[in-house]
Image (cartoon, rainbow, N blue to C red):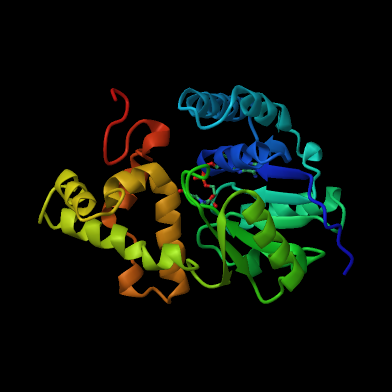
Length: 288
Ligand code: NAI
């Protein structure tokens, strides 16, 4: 397989919680970065968020105003999929296999055969996302953590069909992004979302059984040394995204009781209380 070794342009699809952060990271490291979403309003919100984040970094002395200007000039925003042409494309859209497959087939049709398609999925099989594409060997997981500009870990997920050189190239790109990549085999929840699932699920059991209220559980876990308690972390992740991940692990492990989605997260999603992104989740963020 011939491969262009130089990556200069990265496209990020989905400008929500993760996509905006990933685009900020890529542009900040000197890559021409295209950020794509379906609606202008989402794109504008993401552009504002990135501008605010960069300004905060300048105010704190973490980047210079030249770096801020350079990062902004590396970014372009679009709602037109035909602009998503790049050597590497990272999707961070809704956690749904069918929607991701549809996006990747559209991207494969307009890009060079050498383009690498990365999924930021938290839990869906990379093998299924790649199935049916003309070049499934060029599909790989590139799983960032929230908030993407801050968290160092990136899981580079290889499915059976992923070419070794593709995984290596994305491992290298993660390093260029200033991250700490780890190779992982395609398996439900990869490492972090499988091991950490019980942090959320058991906490919901404790709260649901009235053993303690959510604020007490969060406070206690933080006092033990966890950076965030399970409920504030679920609000940061997004309750819809977190529920989709719970459901996907539950299904993948043959409906094993230990991965059963929590009643509390199901209720939050049904009520549209998705967390920070909607202003309300387990906590209220509107007046904060
Ligand atoms: P989000 O709900 O904040 O954003 C998703 C964005 O994708 C929305 O702006 C939506 O308009 C857009 N979108 C949906 N369908 C699209 C399509 N067909 N084409 C283009 N854009 C489309 O979701 P979030 O939290 O950013 O998650 C995105 C992905 O990243 C999911 O696969 C999730 O599992 C994964 N992830 C999420 C983390 C988190 O903490 N929220 C952490 C790591 C991975």
